[in-house]
Image (cartoon, rainbow, N blue to C red; front, side, top):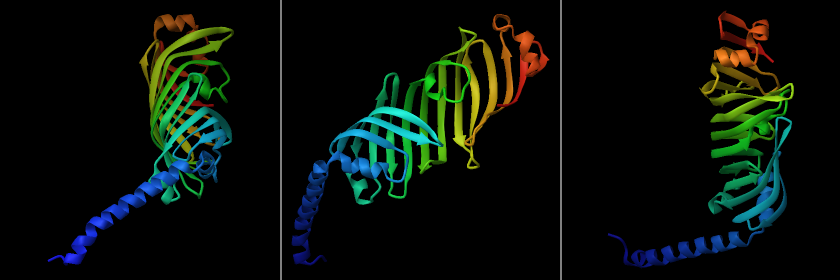
Length: 259
């Protein structure tokens, strides 16, 4: 049987806990956004400028991140913080960044040891976002979902997601060539490379390939593709593709490339 004094104390304890929670919430809403920005950028390559608002809900007019030596601009960043995460010194926030045709939305958590994790993220951006290191101009729209990603400093430790490239085009000799639309499922293999299974959605190229992208640079492509006769004629594929790829039959090619 519960002692009478303890029974009388329980309601008071509930009010005390509620009061502490409300006090904590009020305190967080008064902390400047620059404090949250400081915690989120410590020990990693995330950079912010033009920060205003509060730690609870803030904004940075310009944000960028560097991954394996390559800088990426994220544009304006807005966040809404999970207040409980501050108590664990591991700030987590729902974030949205926008830059022209680029929009990124998801949940980001950071820690004082430089670990940054991303989950439930979506990315919509022009194909020019990945133009760096590709010798021909790209066009089209990228749409990605990232179920999980972990960075420690500049190093990638985990990545899983899906990517599509719609209305894909490349420019060669001053003119644009339409390639159709493609999709992939990708992950970090834990051995220094991102591996993607790539396939076509529509268009003149029937594609099924495994693409390996070592973080140190380069691309390895293994698989096969087939071209429609009309597309093959448009790009004069039979004149130059057999010099690069094995062709077991007309319009079909085996992919075994290291770039």
